[in-house]
Amino acid sequence: MPDAPGLELIRGEIERDCPGAVLATSYDRAQAALLVDPARVLDVLRWLKEQPGQRYDFLSSLHAADYLPHTPRFGVHYELINRERVERIRVKAMLEDASPVGGDDAGPAPVGAGVVSETGPAGQPLPSIDSCVDLFPTADAQEREVFDFFGIVFRGHPNLTRILMPDDYVGWPQRRDFPVGGEPVTFTYSERRYD
Amino acid sequence: MTERLAEVGISTDILDTPDRDREIMTVNVGPHHPATHGVLRLVVDLEGELVRELRPVIGYVHTGIEKSCEDKSYWKVIPFVERMDYVSYFFQMEAFCGAVERLIDLEIPPRAKYLRTLFLELNRIHSHLVWLGTTALDLGAISMLWYCFRERDKILDLFEMATGQRMHTRYFQVGGVIEDIPVGFEAKCRKFAEEMPIRVGQYEALLDRNEVFLQRTKGTGVVSRERLLELGVTGPLLRAAGEPWDLRKAFDYLAYPEMDFKIPVGTVGDNYDRYRVRVAEMVESASIVRQCLDALPDGPYIADDRKYVLPPRSELSTSMESLIHHFKLVTEGYRVAPGEVYYSIEGPRGELGCFVLADGSAKPARVHFRDPSFVNLQAFRDMALDSYVADMIASLGMLDPILGGVDR
Image (cartoon, helix red, strand yellow):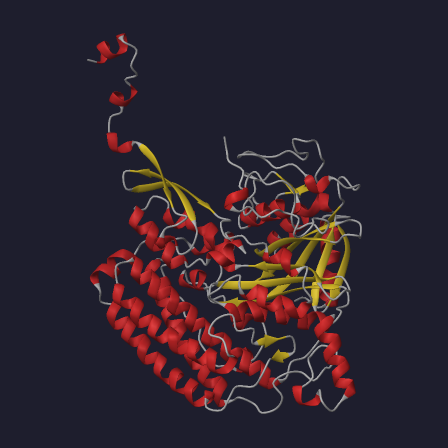
Protein backbone atom coordinates (compact mmCIF):
# COMPACT_ATOMS: atom_id res chain seq x y z
CA MET A 1 0.00 0.00 0.00
CA PRO A 2 1.17 3.51 -0.60
CA ASP A 3 0.80 5.34 2.71
CA ALA A 4 -1.33 8.48 3.03
CA PRO A 5 1.39 10.94 1.86
CA GLY A 6 2.34 8.57 -0.97
CA LEU A 7 -1.26 8.52 -2.09
CA GLU A 8 -1.33 12.32 -2.17
CA LEU A 9 1.84 12.32 -4.26
CA ILE A 10 0.23 9.96 -6.75
CA ARG A 11 -2.83 12.16 -6.82
CA GLY A 12 -0.69 15.22 -7.46
CA GLU A 13 1.06 13.54 -10.37
CA ILE A 14 -2.20 12.39 -11.92
CA GLU A 15 -3.57 15.91 -11.45
CA ARG A 16 -0.64 17.22 -13.49
CA ASP A 17 -1.24 14.84 -16.41
CA CYS A 18 -5.03 14.46 -16.30
CA PRO A 19 -6.38 17.54 -14.53
CA GLY A 20 -9.63 17.02 -12.73
CA ALA A 21 -9.77 13.26 -13.17
CA VAL A 22 -9.26 12.42 -9.49
CA LEU A 23 -12.06 13.83 -7.37
CA ALA A 24 -10.84 12.75 -3.93
CA THR A 25 -8.57 10.35 -2.12
CA SER A 26 -9.28 8.23 0.89
CA TYR A 27 -6.94 6.40 3.18
CA ASP A 28 -9.03 4.19 5.38
CA ARG A 29 -8.04 1.09 7.34
CA ALA A 30 -4.61 1.13 5.69
CA GLN A 31 -6.15 0.93 2.21
CA ALA A 32 -5.45 3.66 -0.30
CA ALA A 33 -8.19 4.65 -2.72
CA LEU A 34 -8.60 7.18 -5.49
CA LEU A 35 -12.10 8.41 -6.19
CA VAL A 36 -12.20 9.26 -9.87
CA ASP A 37 -14.55 10.92 -12.30
CA PRO A 38 -16.35 8.00 -14.02
CA ALA A 39 -15.99 9.70 -17.40
CA ARG A 40 -12.18 9.74 -16.98
CA VAL A 41 -11.66 6.38 -15.34
CA LEU A 42 -9.74 5.02 -18.33
CA ASP A 43 -7.32 7.96 -18.24
CA VAL A 44 -6.50 7.28 -14.61
CA LEU A 45 -6.20 3.52 -15.11
CA ARG A 46 -3.95 4.01 -18.13
CA TRP A 47 -1.82 6.50 -16.24
CA LEU A 48 -1.43 4.14 -13.30
CA LYS A 49 -0.62 1.25 -15.62
CA GLU A 50 1.81 2.93 -17.99
CA GLN A 51 3.41 5.81 -16.12
CA PRO A 52 7.10 5.05 -15.55
CA GLY A 53 7.74 4.72 -11.86
CA GLN A 54 4.16 3.72 -11.10
CA ARG A 55 3.35 0.55 -13.06
CA TYR A 56 0.17 -0.51 -11.32
CA ASP A 57 -0.14 -3.00 -14.15
CA PHE A 58 -1.98 -5.89 -12.55
CA LEU A 59 -5.73 -5.62 -12.09
CA SER A 60 -6.43 -8.10 -9.34
CA SER A 61 -10.13 -7.50 -8.96
CA LEU A 62 -12.94 -5.52 -10.49
CA HIS A 63 -16.19 -5.48 -8.56
CA ALA A 64 -19.11 -3.22 -7.81
CA ALA A 65 -21.21 -2.30 -4.82
CA ASP A 66 -24.57 -0.68 -4.37
CA TYR A 67 -24.39 2.17 -1.86
CA LEU A 68 -28.14 2.71 -1.62
CA PRO A 69 -29.46 5.03 -0.09
CA HIS A 70 -26.40 7.17 -0.76
CA THR A 71 -25.90 9.05 -3.99
CA PRO A 72 -24.17 8.47 -6.28
CA ARG A 73 -25.48 5.01 -5.86
CA PHE A 74 -23.15 2.54 -7.57
CA GLY A 75 -19.44 2.15 -7.03
CA VAL A 76 -17.16 0.30 -9.44
CA HIS A 77 -13.91 -0.72 -7.76
CA TYR A 78 -10.63 -1.52 -9.49
CA GLU A 79 -8.03 -3.17 -7.24
CA LEU A 80 -4.62 -2.59 -8.81
CA ILE A 81 -1.28 -4.04 -7.79
CA ASN A 82 2.20 -2.74 -8.43
CA ARG A 83 4.15 -5.97 -8.35
CA GLU A 84 7.57 -4.34 -8.14
CA ARG A 85 6.88 -2.17 -5.12
CA VAL A 86 4.28 -4.68 -3.83
CA GLU A 87 1.66 -2.02 -3.37
CA ARG A 88 -2.06 -2.00 -3.83
CA ILE A 89 -4.26 0.89 -4.79
CA ARG A 90 -8.00 1.04 -5.28
CA VAL A 91 -9.58 3.13 -7.99
CA LYS A 92 -13.22 3.83 -7.36
CA ALA A 93 -15.75 5.36 -9.73
CA MET A 94 -19.16 6.30 -8.41
CA LEU A 95 -22.08 6.16 -10.82
CA GLU A 96 -25.44 7.86 -10.55
CA ASP A 97 -28.51 5.70 -10.76
CA ALA A 98 -29.87 6.34 -14.22
CA SER A 99 -33.52 5.94 -13.20
CA PRO A 100 -33.76 6.86 -9.53
CA VAL A 101 -37.48 6.38 -9.00
CA GLY A 102 -38.10 2.65 -8.79
CA GLY A 103 -38.78 0.27 -11.59
CA ASP A 104 -35.25 -0.11 -12.81
CA ASP A 105 -34.69 -3.38 -11.05
CA ALA A 106 -37.14 -4.93 -13.46
CA GLY A 107 -34.57 -3.84 -16.02
CA PRO A 108 -33.97 -5.28 -19.41
CA ALA A 109 -32.50 -8.65 -20.01
CA PRO A 110 -30.57 -8.98 -23.22
CA VAL A 111 -32.02 -12.08 -24.77
CA GLY A 112 -29.39 -14.02 -26.61
CA ALA A 113 -26.00 -12.67 -27.44
CA GLY A 114 -25.15 -9.21 -28.58
CA VAL A 115 -24.07 -5.95 -27.12
CA VAL A 116 -26.68 -4.07 -25.14
CA SER A 117 -27.17 -0.38 -25.40
CA GLU A 118 -27.20 1.93 -22.41
CA THR A 119 -30.91 1.53 -22.30
CA GLY A 120 -32.51 -1.87 -22.36
CA PRO A 121 -35.23 -3.02 -24.76
CA ALA A 122 -37.89 -1.71 -22.40
CA GLY A 123 -36.24 1.69 -22.44
CA GLN A 124 -35.01 1.80 -18.85
CA PRO A 125 -31.81 3.77 -18.68
CA LEU A 126 -28.86 1.99 -17.10
CA PRO A 127 -25.78 3.51 -15.51
CA SER A 128 -22.73 3.15 -17.72
CA ILE A 129 -18.96 3.44 -17.61
CA ASP A 130 -16.14 2.82 -20.07
CA SER A 131 -14.90 -0.74 -20.31
CA CYS A 132 -11.25 -1.34 -19.46
CA VAL A 133 -10.96 -4.65 -21.31
CA ASP A 134 -8.43 -3.16 -23.74
CA LEU A 135 -6.18 -2.11 -20.88
CA PHE A 136 -6.73 -5.15 -18.70
CA PRO A 137 -8.04 -8.22 -20.57
CA THR A 138 -8.74 -9.84 -17.20
CA ALA A 139 -11.65 -7.44 -16.75
CA ASP A 140 -13.67 -9.26 -19.41
CA ALA A 141 -15.44 -11.78 -17.20
CA GLN A 142 -15.52 -9.49 -14.19
CA GLU A 143 -17.22 -6.67 -16.08
CA ARG A 144 -19.76 -9.14 -17.36
CA GLU A 145 -20.37 -10.23 -13.79
CA VAL A 146 -20.92 -6.64 -12.67
CA PHE A 147 -23.30 -6.07 -15.57
CA ASP A 148 -25.12 -9.29 -14.73
CA PHE A 149 -25.70 -8.40 -11.09
CA PHE A 150 -25.92 -4.61 -11.04
CA GLY A 151 -27.03 -3.64 -14.53
CA ILE A 152 -24.03 -1.39 -15.05
CA VAL A 153 -23.20 -1.13 -18.75
CA PHE A 154 -19.54 -1.16 -19.72
CA ARG A 155 -19.25 0.83 -22.93
CA GLY A 156 -17.02 -0.88 -25.46
CA HIS A 157 -17.06 -4.31 -23.87
CA PRO A 158 -16.77 -6.93 -26.63
CA ASN A 159 -19.47 -9.27 -25.33
CA LEU A 160 -21.53 -7.74 -22.56
CA THR A 161 -24.03 -10.48 -21.76
CA ARG A 162 -25.10 -12.19 -18.58
CA ILE A 163 -22.48 -14.57 -17.29
CA LEU A 164 -23.79 -16.33 -14.19
CA MET A 165 -27.53 -15.71 -14.33
CA PRO A 166 -29.62 -17.25 -17.13
CA ASP A 167 -29.72 -15.27 -20.37
CA ASP A 168 -33.45 -14.64 -20.09
CA TYR A 169 -33.32 -13.47 -16.49
CA VAL A 170 -35.04 -10.20 -15.70
CA GLY A 171 -33.64 -7.85 -13.07
CA TRP A 172 -30.34 -7.01 -11.41
CA PRO A 173 -30.16 -9.27 -8.37
CA GLN A 174 -27.27 -7.72 -6.44
CA ARG A 175 -28.89 -4.29 -6.21
CA ARG A 176 -29.92 -3.50 -2.68
CA ASP A 177 -33.55 -2.93 -3.60
CA PHE A 178 -33.88 -6.31 -5.28
CA PRO A 179 -36.00 -8.47 -2.96
CA VAL A 180 -34.65 -11.70 -1.53
CA GLY A 181 -36.93 -14.71 -1.62
CA GLY A 182 -39.41 -13.20 -4.05
CA GLU A 183 -38.88 -15.82 -6.67
CA PRO A 184 -41.27 -18.79 -6.70
CA VAL A 185 -39.54 -22.16 -6.59
CA THR A 186 -40.42 -24.40 -9.51
CA PHE A 187 -41.25 -27.98 -8.72
CA THR A 188 -42.22 -30.63 -11.20
CA TYR A 189 -45.92 -30.16 -10.57
CA SER A 190 -45.84 -26.39 -10.90
CA GLU A 191 -43.42 -26.18 -13.77
CA ARG A 192 -44.67 -24.27 -16.75
CA ARG A 193 -44.41 -26.41 -19.83
CA TYR A 194 -42.84 -24.94 -22.91
CA ASP A 195 -45.10 -25.14 -25.91
CA MET B 1 -21.97 -35.44 -61.58
CA THR B 2 -21.64 -31.89 -60.25
CA GLU B 3 -23.62 -30.59 -63.21
CA ARG B 4 -26.37 -33.14 -62.67
CA LEU B 5 -26.70 -32.15 -59.04
CA ALA B 6 -26.74 -28.49 -59.92
CA GLU B 7 -29.48 -29.11 -62.46
CA VAL B 8 -31.78 -30.59 -59.85
CA GLY B 9 -30.89 -27.84 -57.41
CA ILE B 10 -28.78 -29.68 -54.88
CA SER B 11 -25.93 -27.70 -53.34
CA THR B 12 -22.52 -28.94 -54.32
CA ASP B 13 -20.59 -26.85 -51.82
CA ILE B 14 -19.58 -29.84 -49.76
CA LEU B 15 -18.05 -31.58 -52.76
CA ASP B 16 -16.00 -28.49 -53.52
CA THR B 17 -14.38 -28.57 -50.11
CA PRO B 18 -10.86 -29.74 -50.88
CA ASP B 19 -10.40 -31.56 -47.57
CA ARG B 20 -13.30 -32.98 -45.63
CA ASP B 21 -11.29 -32.79 -42.41
CA ARG B 22 -11.33 -29.01 -42.60
CA GLU B 23 -14.97 -28.97 -41.71
CA ILE B 24 -15.71 -27.26 -38.42
CA MET B 25 -17.87 -29.23 -36.04
CA THR B 26 -19.28 -27.70 -32.86
CA VAL B 27 -19.29 -30.07 -29.92
CA ASN B 28 -20.85 -29.51 -26.56
CA VAL B 29 -18.86 -30.82 -23.58
CA GLY B 30 -20.62 -30.92 -20.28
CA PRO B 31 -22.07 -29.54 -18.10
CA HIS B 32 -22.44 -33.06 -16.71
CA HIS B 33 -19.17 -34.55 -17.68
CA PRO B 34 -16.65 -35.96 -15.25
CA ALA B 35 -13.69 -34.40 -17.05
CA THR B 36 -15.01 -30.87 -16.56
CA HIS B 37 -14.43 -31.05 -12.80
CA GLY B 38 -17.86 -29.80 -11.91
CA VAL B 39 -20.67 -28.32 -13.93
CA LEU B 40 -18.64 -26.48 -16.54
CA ARG B 41 -19.98 -26.48 -20.06
CA LEU B 42 -17.64 -26.05 -22.98
CA VAL B 43 -18.81 -25.24 -26.48
CA VAL B 44 -15.93 -26.35 -28.64
CA ASP B 45 -15.43 -25.85 -32.37
CA LEU B 46 -13.42 -28.73 -33.70
CA GLU B 47 -11.57 -29.15 -36.93
CA GLY B 48 -10.88 -32.83 -36.94
CA GLU B 49 -9.29 -33.31 -33.55
CA LEU B 50 -8.07 -29.74 -33.20
CA VAL B 51 -9.77 -27.14 -31.05
CA ARG B 52 -10.30 -24.02 -33.13
CA GLU B 53 -12.61 -22.06 -30.84
CA LEU B 54 -13.73 -22.51 -27.28
CA ARG B 55 -16.40 -20.86 -25.15
CA PRO B 56 -16.77 -21.84 -21.51
CA VAL B 57 -20.36 -21.46 -20.30
CA ILE B 58 -20.68 -21.03 -16.55
CA GLY B 59 -23.38 -20.27 -14.03
CA TYR B 60 -24.89 -23.72 -13.57
CA VAL B 61 -24.25 -23.81 -9.82
CA HIS B 62 -24.81 -20.12 -9.18
CA THR B 63 -26.64 -20.04 -5.86
CA GLY B 64 -26.53 -16.34 -5.04
CA ILE B 65 -24.32 -16.76 -1.99
CA GLU B 66 -23.12 -13.16 -2.19
CA LYS B 67 -26.71 -11.95 -2.10
CA SER B 68 -27.63 -14.28 0.73
CA CYS B 69 -24.73 -12.95 2.79
CA GLU B 70 -26.32 -9.49 2.76
CA ASP B 71 -29.22 -10.94 4.71
CA LYS B 72 -27.15 -12.49 7.50
CA SER B 73 -25.39 -10.94 10.45
CA TYR B 74 -21.61 -11.01 10.15
CA TRP B 75 -20.96 -14.13 12.14
CA LYS B 76 -23.62 -16.07 10.23
CA VAL B 77 -21.96 -15.30 6.90
CA ILE B 78 -19.01 -17.58 7.66
CA PRO B 79 -20.73 -20.92 6.89
CA PHE B 80 -22.13 -19.44 3.66
CA VAL B 81 -18.84 -18.34 2.20
CA GLU B 82 -17.24 -21.67 3.08
CA ARG B 83 -19.52 -23.34 0.56
CA MET B 84 -18.36 -21.28 -2.42
CA ASP B 85 -15.12 -23.03 -3.22
CA TYR B 86 -15.93 -26.27 -1.49
CA VAL B 87 -12.39 -27.64 -1.64
CA SER B 88 -10.68 -24.71 0.06
CA TYR B 89 -13.16 -23.79 2.78
CA PHE B 90 -10.57 -22.60 5.29
CA PHE B 91 -9.36 -20.04 2.79
CA GLN B 92 -12.84 -18.61 2.25
CA MET B 93 -13.27 -18.33 6.01
CA GLU B 94 -9.93 -16.60 6.39
CA ALA B 95 -10.67 -14.15 3.58
CA PHE B 96 -13.99 -13.17 5.09
CA CYS B 97 -12.93 -13.15 8.76
CA GLY B 98 -9.76 -11.25 7.91
CA ALA B 99 -11.75 -8.63 6.00
CA VAL B 100 -14.16 -8.14 8.91
CA GLU B 101 -11.28 -7.99 11.39
CA ARG B 102 -9.76 -5.22 9.32
CA LEU B 103 -13.09 -3.42 9.22
CA ILE B 104 -13.49 -3.47 13.00
CA ASP B 105 -9.77 -3.14 13.62
CA LEU B 106 -9.52 -6.24 15.75
CA GLU B 107 -6.11 -7.76 16.35
CA ILE B 108 -6.09 -11.55 16.66
CA PRO B 109 -3.86 -13.24 19.25
CA PRO B 110 -0.61 -14.92 18.10
CA ARG B 111 -1.84 -18.43 18.83
CA ALA B 112 -4.86 -17.85 16.59
CA LYS B 113 -2.56 -16.62 13.82
CA TYR B 114 -0.50 -19.76 14.01
CA LEU B 115 -3.52 -22.05 14.22
CA ARG B 116 -5.06 -20.36 11.19
CA THR B 117 -1.83 -20.66 9.24
CA LEU B 118 -1.61 -24.33 10.20
CA PHE B 119 -5.12 -25.11 9.00
CA LEU B 120 -4.74 -23.06 5.84
CA GLU B 121 -1.67 -25.03 4.87
CA LEU B 122 -3.34 -28.36 5.68
CA ASN B 123 -6.20 -27.20 3.49
CA ARG B 124 -3.78 -26.28 0.72
CA ILE B 125 -2.35 -29.80 0.75
CA HIS B 126 -5.89 -31.18 0.78
CA SER B 127 -6.88 -29.07 -2.19
CA HIS B 128 -3.80 -30.03 -4.18
CA LEU B 129 -4.40 -33.69 -3.37
CA VAL B 130 -7.93 -33.50 -4.76
CA TRP B 131 -6.52 -31.78 -7.83
CA LEU B 132 -3.73 -34.33 -8.33
CA GLY B 133 -6.00 -37.32 -7.86
CA THR B 134 -8.71 -36.17 -10.23
CA THR B 135 -6.40 -34.72 -12.87
CA ALA B 136 -4.22 -37.79 -12.96
CA LEU B 137 -7.45 -39.77 -13.31
CA ASP B 138 -8.35 -37.70 -16.36
CA LEU B 139 -4.99 -38.59 -17.85
CA GLY B 140 -5.55 -42.29 -17.24
CA ALA B 141 -3.55 -42.76 -14.03
CA ILE B 142 -6.35 -44.30 -11.99
CA SER B 143 -4.26 -45.48 -9.08
CA MET B 144 -3.23 -41.89 -8.28
CA LEU B 145 -6.75 -41.18 -7.12
CA TRP B 146 -6.57 -43.81 -4.39
CA TYR B 147 -3.17 -42.69 -3.12
CA CYS B 148 -4.13 -39.02 -3.08
CA PHE B 149 -7.46 -39.61 -1.41
CA ARG B 150 -5.78 -41.76 1.22
CA GLU B 151 -3.71 -38.77 2.35
CA ARG B 152 -6.65 -36.45 1.91
CA ASP B 153 -8.60 -38.62 4.32
CA LYS B 154 -5.87 -38.19 6.91
CA ILE B 155 -6.20 -34.42 6.59
CA LEU B 156 -9.96 -34.70 6.94
CA ASP B 157 -9.38 -36.79 10.08
CA LEU B 158 -7.27 -33.95 11.44
CA PHE B 159 -9.99 -31.44 10.60
CA GLU B 160 -12.57 -33.62 12.30
CA MET B 161 -10.42 -34.01 15.38
CA ALA B 162 -9.90 -30.27 15.81
CA THR B 163 -13.18 -28.87 14.58
CA GLY B 164 -15.77 -31.65 14.69
CA GLN B 165 -16.38 -31.54 10.95
CA ARG B 166 -14.57 -33.05 8.03
CA MET B 167 -15.64 -30.41 5.54
CA HIS B 168 -17.10 -26.91 6.00
CA THR B 169 -15.75 -26.70 9.50
CA ARG B 170 -16.68 -23.12 10.46
CA TYR B 171 -13.54 -23.16 12.58
CA PHE B 172 -12.32 -19.60 12.01
CA GLN B 173 -14.15 -16.86 13.86
CA VAL B 174 -13.91 -13.13 13.68
CA GLY B 175 -11.19 -12.62 16.30
CA GLY B 176 -9.49 -16.03 16.19
CA VAL B 177 -10.64 -19.63 16.08
CA ILE B 178 -13.66 -21.18 17.78
CA GLU B 179 -11.75 -23.48 20.11
CA ASP B 180 -8.26 -24.67 20.86
CA ILE B 181 -6.81 -27.79 19.26
CA PRO B 182 -7.50 -30.89 21.36
CA VAL B 183 -4.98 -33.02 23.23
CA GLY B 184 -3.27 -35.40 20.86
CA PHE B 185 -3.83 -33.24 17.80
CA GLU B 186 -0.30 -31.97 17.74
CA ALA B 187 1.25 -35.43 17.72
CA LYS B 188 -1.11 -36.64 15.01
CA CYS B 189 -0.60 -33.56 12.89
CA ARG B 190 3.17 -33.76 13.30
CA LYS B 191 3.14 -37.37 12.20
CA PHE B 192 1.20 -36.38 9.09
CA ALA B 193 3.52 -33.48 8.32
CA GLU B 194 6.56 -35.74 8.63
CA GLU B 195 4.94 -38.34 6.42
CA MET B 196 3.62 -36.07 3.69
CA PRO B 197 6.93 -35.30 1.91
CA ILE B 198 7.54 -39.06 1.67
CA ARG B 199 4.10 -39.53 0.14
CA VAL B 200 4.79 -36.75 -2.34
CA GLY B 201 7.95 -38.59 -3.30
CA GLN B 202 5.86 -41.66 -3.96
CA TYR B 203 3.46 -39.72 -6.19
CA GLU B 204 6.41 -38.42 -8.13
CA ALA B 205 7.78 -41.93 -8.47
CA LEU B 206 4.47 -42.97 -9.95
CA LEU B 207 4.14 -40.08 -12.38
CA ASP B 208 7.51 -38.56 -13.17
CA ARG B 209 8.74 -41.45 -15.26
CA ASN B 210 5.36 -42.45 -16.59
CA GLU B 211 5.69 -42.15 -20.35
CA VAL B 212 1.97 -41.56 -20.93
CA PHE B 213 1.78 -38.86 -18.27
CA LEU B 214 4.86 -37.08 -19.58
CA GLN B 215 3.67 -37.12 -23.18
CA ARG B 216 0.27 -35.80 -22.16
CA THR B 217 1.65 -32.95 -20.06
CA LYS B 218 4.98 -31.83 -21.49
CA GLY B 219 4.66 -28.99 -23.94
CA THR B 220 0.87 -28.84 -23.81
CA GLY B 221 -1.24 -25.89 -22.76
CA VAL B 222 1.61 -23.39 -22.85
CA VAL B 223 0.66 -19.77 -22.22
CA SER B 224 3.30 -17.09 -21.90
CA ARG B 225 3.91 -15.31 -18.63
CA GLU B 226 2.96 -11.93 -20.10
CA ARG B 227 -0.34 -13.23 -21.38
CA LEU B 228 -1.15 -14.83 -18.01
CA LEU B 229 -0.49 -11.55 -16.24
CA GLU B 230 -2.73 -9.71 -18.70
CA LEU B 231 -5.47 -12.21 -17.99
CA GLY B 232 -5.10 -11.72 -14.25
CA VAL B 233 -4.10 -15.32 -13.63
CA THR B 234 -2.55 -15.95 -10.22
CA GLY B 235 -1.43 -18.89 -8.14
CA PRO B 236 0.35 -22.05 -9.33
CA LEU B 237 -0.60 -21.36 -12.96
CA LEU B 238 1.29 -18.08 -12.96
CA ARG B 239 4.18 -19.47 -10.95
CA ALA B 240 4.54 -22.37 -13.38
CA ALA B 241 5.23 -19.79 -16.08
CA GLY B 242 8.15 -18.45 -14.07
CA GLU B 243 6.63 -15.51 -12.21
CA PRO B 244 7.41 -15.82 -8.49
CA TRP B 245 4.27 -14.04 -7.30
CA ASP B 246 2.85 -15.34 -4.04
CA LEU B 247 0.75 -13.20 -1.71
CA ARG B 248 2.06 -15.13 1.29
CA LYS B 249 5.45 -13.56 0.62
CA ALA B 250 4.28 -10.28 -0.89
CA PHE B 251 1.86 -9.14 1.79
CA ASP B 252 2.04 -9.51 5.50
CA TYR B 253 -0.77 -11.59 6.96
CA LEU B 254 -1.16 -14.25 9.64
CA ALA B 255 2.03 -16.01 10.66
CA TYR B 256 3.55 -16.19 7.17
CA PRO B 257 6.24 -13.55 7.80
CA GLU B 258 7.69 -15.85 10.48
CA MET B 259 7.62 -18.92 8.26
CA ASP B 260 10.55 -20.15 6.23
CA PHE B 261 9.36 -21.49 2.91
CA LYS B 262 10.17 -21.32 -0.78
CA ILE B 263 8.03 -20.41 -3.76
CA PRO B 264 8.32 -23.12 -6.41
CA VAL B 265 8.34 -21.73 -9.94
CA GLY B 266 8.37 -23.37 -13.35
CA THR B 267 10.21 -22.40 -16.50
CA VAL B 268 8.14 -23.28 -19.55
CA GLY B 269 4.62 -22.84 -18.27
CA ASP B 270 3.27 -26.07 -19.74
CA ASN B 271 1.05 -28.58 -17.98
CA TYR B 272 4.06 -30.46 -16.68
CA ASP B 273 5.37 -27.35 -14.92
CA ARG B 274 1.95 -26.79 -13.39
CA TYR B 275 2.08 -30.30 -12.00
CA ARG B 276 5.62 -29.83 -10.70
CA VAL B 277 4.80 -26.51 -9.02
CA ARG B 278 1.79 -27.87 -7.18
CA VAL B 279 3.59 -30.99 -6.06
CA ALA B 280 6.49 -28.91 -4.77
CA GLU B 281 4.02 -26.64 -3.00
CA MET B 282 2.67 -29.60 -1.07
CA VAL B 283 6.12 -30.24 0.35
CA GLU B 284 6.51 -26.58 1.28
CA SER B 285 3.10 -26.57 2.92
CA ALA B 286 4.00 -29.62 4.98
CA SER B 287 7.09 -27.76 6.10
CA ILE B 288 4.99 -24.73 7.13
CA VAL B 289 2.70 -27.05 9.11
CA ARG B 290 5.73 -28.41 10.96
CA GLN B 291 7.02 -24.91 11.66
CA CYS B 292 3.62 -23.84 12.97
CA LEU B 293 3.58 -26.77 15.37
CA ASP B 294 7.14 -26.09 16.52
CA ALA B 295 6.56 -22.41 17.16
CA LEU B 296 2.92 -22.55 18.29
CA PRO B 297 2.72 -19.81 20.94
CA ASP B 298 0.77 -20.23 24.14
CA GLY B 299 -2.02 -17.90 25.11
CA PRO B 300 -5.59 -17.29 24.05
CA TYR B 301 -6.85 -18.67 20.76
CA ILE B 302 -9.43 -15.92 20.27
CA ALA B 303 -9.40 -12.19 20.94
CA ASP B 304 -10.83 -10.99 24.22
CA ASP B 305 -13.12 -8.29 22.93
CA ARG B 306 -16.59 -8.96 24.27
CA LYS B 307 -18.19 -6.64 21.77
CA TYR B 308 -17.26 -8.96 18.92
CA VAL B 309 -16.30 -12.32 20.41
CA LEU B 310 -18.55 -14.69 22.32
CA PRO B 311 -17.66 -14.95 26.03
CA PRO B 312 -16.41 -18.32 27.30
CA ARG B 313 -19.19 -20.76 28.02
CA SER B 314 -18.12 -21.14 31.66
CA GLU B 315 -18.79 -17.48 32.40
CA LEU B 316 -22.39 -17.58 31.31
CA SER B 317 -23.68 -19.10 34.54
CA THR B 318 -21.77 -16.73 36.82
CA SER B 319 -21.51 -13.38 35.08
CA MET B 320 -24.54 -11.28 34.14
CA GLU B 321 -22.31 -9.11 31.96
CA SER B 322 -21.19 -12.09 29.93
CA LEU B 323 -24.75 -13.31 29.56
CA ILE B 324 -25.84 -9.95 28.16
CA HIS B 325 -22.96 -9.89 25.71
CA HIS B 326 -23.70 -13.44 24.66
CA PHE B 327 -27.36 -12.62 24.13
CA LYS B 328 -26.60 -9.49 22.12
CA LEU B 329 -24.02 -11.20 19.95
CA VAL B 330 -26.20 -14.20 19.18
CA THR B 331 -29.43 -12.32 18.52
CA GLU B 332 -28.48 -9.12 16.75
CA GLY B 333 -24.80 -9.65 16.14
CA TYR B 334 -22.36 -6.78 16.27
CA ARG B 335 -22.61 -3.59 14.29
CA VAL B 336 -19.75 -2.56 12.07
CA ALA B 337 -19.00 1.08 11.40
CA PRO B 338 -19.41 2.11 7.74
CA GLY B 339 -16.40 1.35 5.61
CA GLU B 340 -15.08 -1.02 3.01
CA VAL B 341 -12.18 -3.41 2.91
CA TYR B 342 -10.63 -5.61 0.26
CA TYR B 343 -8.55 -8.35 1.81
CA SER B 344 -6.82 -10.97 -0.27
CA ILE B 345 -4.89 -14.09 0.58
CA GLU B 346 -3.06 -16.71 -1.42
CA GLY B 347 -5.50 -19.54 -1.95
CA PRO B 348 -4.55 -22.88 -3.49
CA ARG B 349 -5.63 -21.52 -6.90
CA GLY B 350 -4.38 -17.98 -6.61
CA GLU B 351 -5.46 -14.67 -5.19
CA LEU B 352 -8.60 -15.13 -3.16
CA GLY B 353 -9.96 -11.71 -2.32
CA CYS B 354 -12.90 -10.72 -0.20
CA PHE B 355 -14.53 -7.30 -0.45
CA VAL B 356 -16.82 -6.38 2.43
CA LEU B 357 -18.85 -3.18 2.51
CA ALA B 358 -20.28 -2.23 5.89
CA ASP B 359 -23.11 0.27 6.19
CA GLY B 360 -23.22 0.55 9.98
CA SER B 361 -25.76 -2.21 10.56
CA ALA B 362 -25.20 -5.73 11.85
CA LYS B 363 -25.29 -7.18 8.33
CA PRO B 364 -22.79 -6.59 5.56
CA ALA B 365 -24.06 -4.43 2.71
CA ARG B 366 -21.98 -6.33 0.17
CA VAL B 367 -19.77 -9.37 0.29
CA HIS B 368 -17.88 -10.05 -2.90
CA PHE B 369 -15.37 -12.81 -3.48
CA ARG B 370 -12.71 -12.45 -6.10
CA ASP B 371 -12.49 -16.13 -6.80
CA PRO B 372 -9.26 -17.30 -8.44
CA SER B 373 -11.00 -20.04 -10.43
CA PHE B 374 -13.37 -17.51 -11.99
CA VAL B 375 -10.54 -15.31 -13.21
CA ASN B 376 -8.18 -18.13 -14.13
CA LEU B 377 -10.83 -19.75 -16.30
CA GLN B 378 -10.36 -16.89 -18.78
CA ALA B 379 -6.93 -18.30 -19.60
CA PHE B 380 -8.42 -21.63 -20.65
CA ARG B 381 -9.12 -20.50 -24.21
CA ASP B 382 -5.47 -19.54 -24.63
CA MET B 383 -4.37 -22.84 -23.17
CA ALA B 384 -6.55 -25.05 -25.33
CA LEU B 385 -6.70 -23.23 -28.66
CA ASP B 386 -5.17 -25.16 -31.58
CA SER B 387 -4.45 -28.15 -29.40
CA TYR B 388 -5.99 -31.61 -29.51
CA VAL B 389 -9.21 -32.33 -27.64
CA ALA B 390 -7.33 -34.66 -25.34
CA ASP B 391 -4.86 -31.89 -24.47
CA MET B 392 -7.77 -29.57 -23.79
CA ILE B 393 -8.98 -31.98 -21.14
CA ALA B 394 -5.47 -32.18 -19.69
CA SER B 395 -5.22 -28.37 -19.63
CA LEU B 396 -8.57 -28.07 -17.92
CA GLY B 397 -7.45 -30.47 -15.23
CA MET B 398 -4.22 -28.54 -14.74
CA LEU B 399 -6.15 -25.28 -14.58
CA ASP B 400 -7.97 -26.76 -11.58
CA PRO B 401 -11.17 -24.74 -11.54
CA ILE B 402 -13.66 -25.37 -8.77
CA LEU B 403 -17.05 -24.53 -10.20
CA GLY B 404 -18.58 -23.84 -6.83
CA GLY B 405 -16.12 -20.98 -6.59
CA VAL B 406 -16.57 -19.88 -10.19
CA ASP B 407 -20.33 -19.58 -9.95
CA ARG B 408 -20.71 -18.74 -6.27
